Length: 249
Image 1 (spheres, helix red, strand yellow):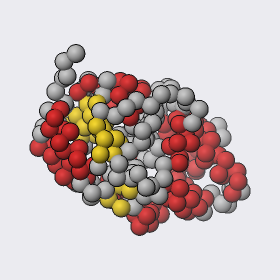
Image 2: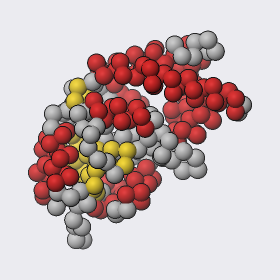
Image 3: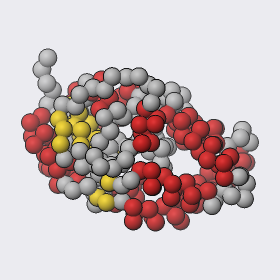
């Protein structure tokens, strides 16, 4: 089959564009977030709700946004309760999230790869699992040193109705940016959540910069899905995505 010329590059964010110890981050994050709920929930109840609601997002079937799904699970059916809880999350993100930058390191070559993609006339997408709000995704993109670049789409909890590793997550993106999957390259560090994009017809690039980092969380979410891991079309450091792009354009 003819390879259609590349039109878009999708980049994962966690441990692709910013490198960090995921377990350490989530421990600090959960602790800081709980401070905003401690007047209404016990620690174990909070932890249980957060985990359960996160799993709920992963099971999203496209009927609601990920945010609606999360809130339906985390808050009771009471709409006043929902508003209060959403406000607590929003205040936490506005006031506290910036502190986690100290745990993050920008991946080498992120900016060069993206500028090269733009120069090659390609659309750029931040295809990070849409579990955070857009303002938080933007902050995290800033930490990678590429926040000022122009993206066709940044997937977030408000604008997405699926999650990785659901193939519909990737198809929702291609639909929004109006590019067919076989004209896309998915770049990410996760052999499960990111490389699965190849099953939609996308080309894939597995980054190795974070090999010494932990990706327990995504492993945990992937467990029991019993899917054979597709082999990536390319594999290497993030900075070497440039020759891969040249090959595909």
